[in-house]
Amino acid sequence: MPPALDLSSLPLPALEQLVAELGEPRFRALQLFRWIHRAGATSLEQMTNLPLALRERLTTSAQLAPLTVAEQQESADGTRKLRLRCADGASIESVLIPRETKLTLCVSSQVGCALGCRFCATATMGLQRNLTAGEIVDQVYRANALRPADDRLTNLVFMGMGEPLANFESVATAIELLCAADGLDLSPRRITVSTAGVVPGIRELGHRLRQVGLAISLHATTDALRDRLMPINRRWPLAALFAALREYPLPRRRRITFEYVLLPGLNDSAADVTRLCRLLDRLPSKINLLPYNPCRTDQPDLLRPRAEQLETFAELLRARGLTATVRHSRGLDIAAACGQLVVTGAAATRHGFEHPFPGACRRMSRAGRARGAASTGAERTGQYVSTGAQPQRRDRSAQQFSDRLPAKPLN
Ligand code: SAH
Image (cartoon, rainbow, N blue to C red; front, side, top):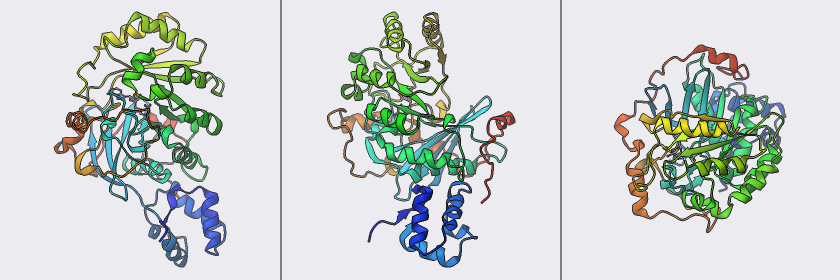
């Protein structure tokens, strides 16, 4: 039997084709689309304005397979981490981050990750599989259903587990679904895709979704260090990455964000400042400096910088005319900060998967993987609070940013 069509992954024209094949009028597709992408419906039974006969026929060839919220943790700073279970049992994490007037959702694009960055906890999982477009959008709908009614999502970042540009088609389709006028109608300008430097994906993103924000995880100014920290650099070294960025069709007044995890003694020298200036010369850019969030006991040379080391490095960059902001970690106490997302043991299921960049990434040894994973907070399941715990109220001024996001969307 062919696998059932995943309804929440389908753009409107594909739903129209499906309902036409079932002999139904075209407007039924729009009703279906609104139930899934505007109302966040989790079952066909909820779609009460669709004829029962159509719902029954749909179940023979198609399915809705929503994510379920398996666990929720809330940080002392208000950051909330959700562990979500896919229909096949795989687990992923999304993080809701309140910051001043914004409420940002950080979503995952893959179960695990193939890239093997040395500083990242997700890398210890290896790649289990790509997420479907439906599983990506559903992270937004599940988070939307959990937050208080007057607290609206303002921003979406692809900075959770996985490399979004290694799963380009699902990520691009998900963004188009989220921005559809009959769905949540998100603004692409409030969505950021972060990449470790998948050059073909950067080009594709520029062609297909240039209004979406682009962030590059840079972390090093020489190929020698970047090769060591991020094996993907061996496939697309700095010259190839920056050639693609210089050709990127950036909309007017937009900048490329560069994430730079400060690793004392490795990438924080005066020479790094000079090289950063040269790399970013005349490229509309801003730099987010991040402290390394310790999560890899198998990498003892990676140290967390002190706050003043971050500030000093930022000042040196600013003195050279670059825009640099220090980003303080959020959700550190619940292992929800950058690079700390990992699902291990019984929470994860392994699937066979072909490596997208053969030869580019060294796989970690089994022992290394176990050591790295053992240090992360995701395993401390005793800390999880049960699903449905009441989240704290946030600053209501967030609403001014979120007119495009209906609190409880109606069909
Ligand atoms: N694969 C994509 C998406 C992940 S985004 C990318 O690399 O951009 C997660 C961000 O957190 C990336 O910038 C990543 O480099 C950074 N990060 C990973 N591990 C980290 C750690 N331990 N401390 C701080 N930042 C980390």
